[in-house]
Length: 419
Image (cartoon, rainbow, N blue to C red; front, side, top):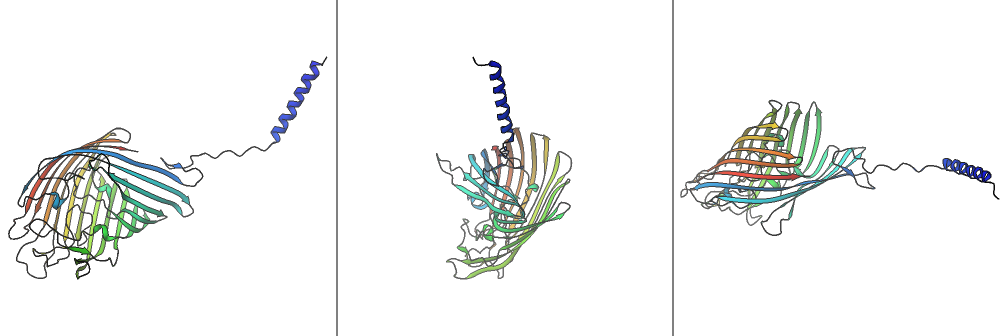
């Protein structure tokens, strides 16, 4: 009979030996965490050193716009842009419902040169059909240290000085506009930054100006660019708010069609732009913007080009002058509700003629007042209501048409879910 005591002692000894051997075995290295990116909203792509984020929004808006057209009785959208946002606006009362979506990808890597970043953003517009709405490229750029290469906001853009608004109408003083560019940004300290960019001027080239009785543009074509637009911006940021002053020059090169028959316009245009957002109190901010342009025709929300002809279409004038001023207030009633009210005036007219013209030519001035309230009931969901009044006046087109004068009143609702 087996001695039970000996069996128990032998088993205990075997366990001690086995445990000692296990303790002597090397341990596997601790597994690195999957999420190492310390940027909010970013995750690490497995097996890479890239911090990645997907963002965007889905947006719906609906609105009603009413206008009164006198003079030529033409479609106002022909002269000033669609009051109904991305939908065609007629001369009668207009009810619009529209949807769009935006999707962006942000990839960043920390290197010995600093953060290297690639950013892509696409937007699709509803075509009011069962399916449709192709993606459009809004941004595609690379950031490497202080350098930016690709398509992004022009240096004239200063979003802090523009009030929040819906997509329903064209807003005078909208500071946004994008171009393909090479940019260098240099921090100067104390909240001051200097940036200089070479921007592709193609996005600014209207290439024509309405010149006759029904607003039909003449045959103009943009010649090959000989130089990029040169833009510089000085920005200030602090606890008091933010401000920016930007200036740029570019060359206008146009020809009457067919392309290459004759150079009709070759001149240097320039623009200066300024904007500020000043915190008056903890809940109220003052917004202000202004620009002046002589032949630059940057992103101005005015349907004007850089050249104009007389009624026969044979005379080319350069240096269409534009200017705009805008002021407003934004309010934060509570953490989930904000509002703004703003007024803007803009004017555009051609420069002087090298030879006498027996008739006048087109000039435009626009006055606009916009007020809105935005509510964020839950995180990343924004609901807004906006009311706007716009008055557009065109000067004498020719001896047979006294010009155009119309105003429009609009009310819009917008819902945006961001992620």
